[in-house]
Length: 295
Length: 83
Image 1 (cartoon, chains in turn purple, green):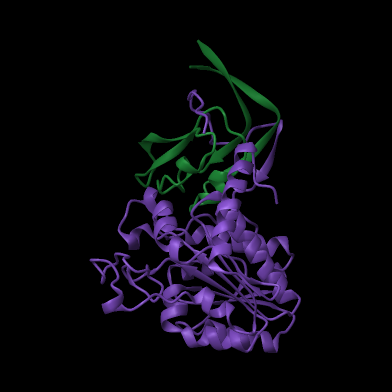
Image 2: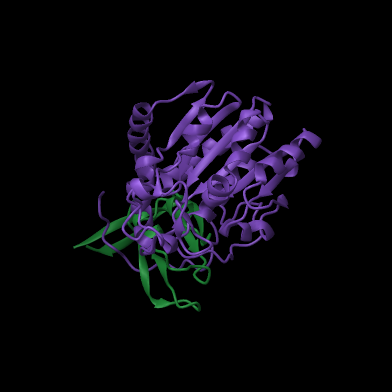
């Protein structure tokens, strides 16, 4: 990376008066406000932004109904302009099934965390996927119960330090993590399964594309669609906010591999995902250096 | 010896919404964001922009507090900077 000598600080309190156009607005139309109660450095607002933008891009705003799980992201229930039904802990996929069967023209999705989906309601999401319900489940996976203090979930990786695995998760004592994306990809009813991440700008752009494809899958009534998004939780991981992205890519990201796990009926292998991630990361970084990610 | 730095874009920063997580600083490809010395009303340091922005929106994509809006200039702005 070339280093530019740092000049004077530019006034960024107001937009340029003329001679400039907006490339990206501060907020997607679906968000009322930029204030929220989540911690500094949290990855969930990034995932929610991508979700809102994906719905806007596909023109699905007026048909969207969200079955919301329980976690930190639940506080977005009041600030996102989408119809929301609050589910019991872990039960959002079943609720979404009911909504979709009654309102087949609606775009129904769930928003859940790893504690909600993989610990509390694992059977709900698996059965919904196996039945091939035409709903989209979105999982925000940070490997800890962030809202209640940062203890281990079923997706915490081996060696991960959490509040109740102080010396790191030990397979002999705590068992192995569940790779929920890989599990769902094996089910016949699942049409589209992908795992994104929000640890850098390139990954955010990739994740948004995955969300768009998932909603397209639902629109085409092709079956169950699932997008897992790895998010930072510096508070729950007990690390400084600036170290969150690197911690994510080196700890969770090494086990829960990013990429499209199942698309067009093809299940991808770990090696294929690895190779694709290296290639895509270089491609997206080059696009950013040239001045922006192409849509 | 001064150099000319071209800015193809710029941003606005909602400093009062910032929670000082510093994710935007390493995300910026031309590395023209730094953290401020003063703090906002909540007590957090916030990012400041220097000449050289390309308008790529990487900062906006990694900002959990939705502080940024990104603009691109029709004609790039040139600033003379001490090397």
